[in-house]
Length: 422
Image 1 (cartoon, rainbow, N blue to C red):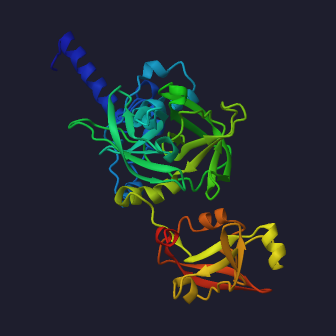
Image 2: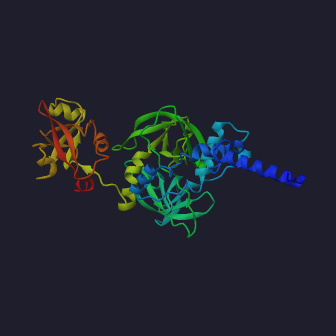
Image 3: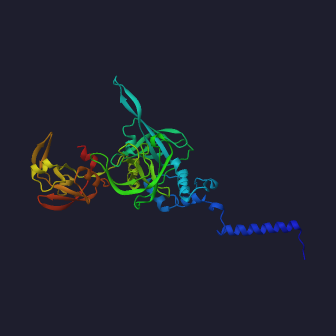
């Protein structure tokens, strides 16, 4: 029998133990403290496995938008396990999302031009807001009202660097704008991934990152308080399907991302309801699906091309209803149609009896449009909303009232910009 020395026995014992441990780890029987594995910490793993970039379907959706996103799955941010031990699971989730996505949120400041007493142009401070880096080439998504009327736009990153940006395109109708800055060669930008606003539920947790009152890098947490809110932003524009949240949103948060617990953007924080000027827990965000629909066009064309009915319409008002003895109180009276235009060829009838109202002339006797593309059109704002997602050349169902008879026509849409500029 061969005898082994004491040192050899110890050596073979240690070697055998290592083999057993490695075997167990390979089959997932054992894990390091805090469930640390090759993907990150426990808090980070809960988010990392679901971060966009891992899902081929989401990668394809980004390709269709023409966007280049950060490789989250191959280069995740790390959070020290020891630092997260004292915190609850909910807190660890918040910390992980903030650590991961905070570098993708920017602070936007602007300069405008004013005229002094000597009629000289003088630069002055303008709006301030937030934005999300959505493309590694330097594209930033924000609100239109943040950069409206800006002479210069400055984009401030999380590392303190500042760049002058340009406005690539704007969509005032949805209060969305895309900016662009030129990152230096070798700078790796972290982007905010797009999620979906289709399956949101009232009560689900959301997080907002922004720069309220110039306090940079601020995280607030809340829930989805309501869905499908129509918010009128101007006399003609209503943004449909706004997300209502109680996550604290204040001046300066505009344009920043509203995130779900998977770290994906589900909305763009836009406005608050506030009698006092501060947050009272009623904030609104533009759904991210609206942004995804218009971002590619803004990058490619600088604007969003929308369809329109090539006719001159008048929103009904009480004096007109009484004078013309109309059978309805709301709707859009077709005053004139373009000769041999798409609306006329589709069967819409214009008015023939001219009457003067103030400085304008209205032609009575035409059709009254009561619905477009399935949406009631009680006002001009409703017509803008009904055609917000329609392109020139598309066909829509237009419900009209002619006399006392209702009928539905199929109308091919013209280009809105061309029609309204005539």
